[in-house]
Length: 110
Length: 110
DNA sequence: TCAATCTTTCAAGAGATGTTGAGATATCGA
DNA sequence: TCGATATCTCAACATCTCTTGAAAGATTGA
Image 1 (spheres, rainbow over the protein chains, first blue to last red):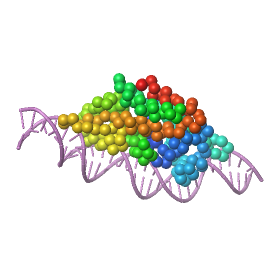
Image 2 (tube, helix red, strand yellow; image 1 turned 120 degrees about the vertical axis):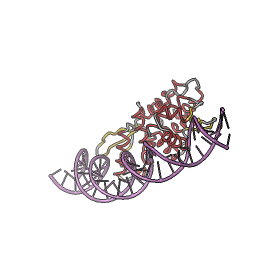
Image 3 (cartoon, chains in turn green, purple, cyan, yellow; image 1 turned 90 degrees about the vertical axis):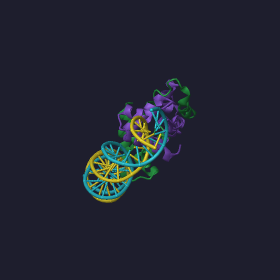
Image 4 (cartoon, rainbow over the protein chains, first blue to last red; image 1 turned 60 degrees about the vertical axis):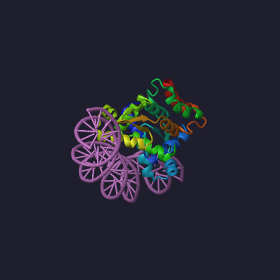
């Protein structure tokens, strides 16, 4: 993950509809959800949902695959992990206690 | 960390100068850096640096304290950890392997 | 092939955001 | 107090982003 990719990812996450979508797909897991289901879940028109889904895919935060008439989107977990790593890189510098909370925040779920 | 706070934080991180500043302060650790030093490090005028530092502080990602004539900014590590936790909340749903990379990304530094 | 379903693309308007330079505010040493 | 240093505030301008509705593209079952 380089700086320009991270910028793009943060920009993608800085919009209410898109953040809702990513969290929905993180919860949905690897199976993902169809575009129409996502749009309905976040209260967006098909055009609006498509616009934001493209934006997120372009940023590398989600991936898509076609399944019959539907397009299924799912979270790009490695990209999300890379984003976290990029943000906290070199965070300790001899003070492990300052970034330990970030690790602690993730461990309960895994 | 609630959704609107997370949105604000991601918006703050979605701008090149601001992302540079946060990473600089993450590396600098709890001691922080003076506004002037930060501005110079990222190649921003005093006005530009001040604008972005305010933005980041308003988003809760950095904190400031006055020290003589300087204002010292430092990373708000708990807020960064909260952001990570918000993004990955409920990520596993029976598939621990999908979010383990995010944890692995942070552990080497601590 | 035809009609139905699901999704994407396009253009235009409204609104939000970043940059700039000048000036204001706060602190300190003489 | 006065001048110097460090930082912030303000307004105007240019630019980017989001939303909307209509139309186009892809896929499937009859």
